[in-house]
Image (cartoon, rainbow, N blue to C red; front, top):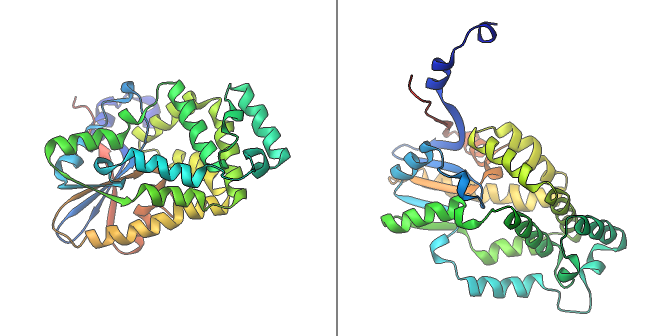
Length: 290
């Protein structure tokens, strides 16, 4: 093969590479679909320049949550109401002895204080464990894509909307079957021991637009539990697709920012839009000029 025999670096550079960003074209406007990583490190910036270009073109940002109207006190109250066990049961009771023993062994090996989560429902324990594991290696929402773009939008006077409220998102989790919640907690604990290297791989795949990697690793893991997959991915994707299809009949251009896993696979938003007849294409980061 010629590529194995000759250096074609200049040509390859001109072509650039795909990113986890899609363009859906309406009759008179554009809607950009950006897959987000919610927590990042300072070293993960700057973001690909094509994201800045999409942001610059859009009049309005739409995210999973309306980031400039979040009420942390109200959110914490909802977490306490939904995620804290208010009777004499404990996390051990909800998990069952066998699953709890497995979870406790894994947690101890990675120095996670599972006993401090005794009054947390499994879905809340999973969130708290993942956030703790990520924080230990420097990941924070302050550098996440949503907060980064929200800060720019506030500064630039751009409108920000949200597809969902905090209350809705928490109720999705709280409404999971206990079996799905157990699966979620076990998956989070299993991933916590290697979370830094896993995140490095995810961020690399995200930057390179490697949707196959995101689909075959992260999405496939969630899909192991049908309830988890249907509730957290499929149902939400279909609701969002309905709203995006309506936006594609607008005159303003939009940048929509949702978790990257919502944009990959057969049930991903780009595929659902394409099935409705919209022209959707994955965008590319320009290469260096020779």
